[in-house]
View 1 (cartoon, rainbow, N blue to C red):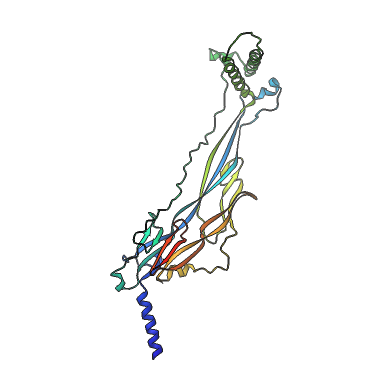
View 2 (cartoon, rainbow, N blue to C red):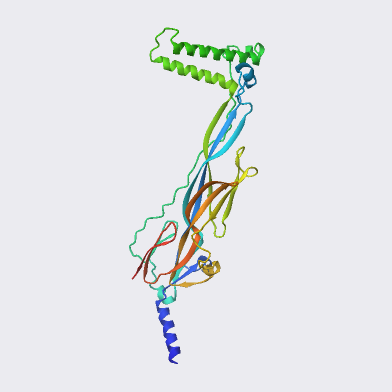
Length: 357
């Protein structure tokens, strides 16, 4: 009888201390309105691929380059090529829709003076518990980058001879004759250039000589490009947002080829590998079923993130590797909340400070 009385006394004592109950949102009646919701943070990986796009354009008179300029070093066909010049990775933080929790009173009696002193960010991520006047800085979420790029094809450059009557171009000059006239102009430009730098003309041009020389070089380059062709190179950003998931160590981003860049059909696979997690296989974890279907008395959920090695592979080639802290690969852990003051890291969900009253 004494043992039974002692057991009942202990149970009664525990019930007196039990002031709060925490449930996963899936275990909460939609009509419940006497509690407070909070969320844990999750990570999004922003991957910016810096792509270099090079376009080659053959000159209008490339077919005469060998004959008139005695060179094989010219662009014979229009082409476009791509290469990954750099990979930039940023870790963003947002509220995790999979881990929303509801704190409420454990019984009708404690509802009358129910006050959890819960501080949240603007997204609903838990910042602190038990503080009457705790002022915490809101989560500094890295803004999403917006990149403006242009993949428009450059028009092929066409030489327009300086002739007053356009009909003369089509009726009196063949393409070969126009090409020959351009070559003759190149020779004249080089002669003028030589005369300037050698002082052959014995004219003092003063400081303007440098400008004249630059203009001659520019004009010669434009004429030569009509035979040799031109190249245009520019960079743009291709951005991916990846949400890591527990249990998925490999993610497929897409395909990349030197001919088409990022696409869905041809090229080498680009994959993300997560490996070497700081959370060992022997680390005890609450099951998803326990988290979603169990009521926890006087306890709060927090998160311990995991350090993982993130690799980005292009086919079998490693193009990025770094050690990162990822929330989703960590653990959900319970902490006592009765008569406690707690401060949480709003980027990871980890506890930063514990004070027992």
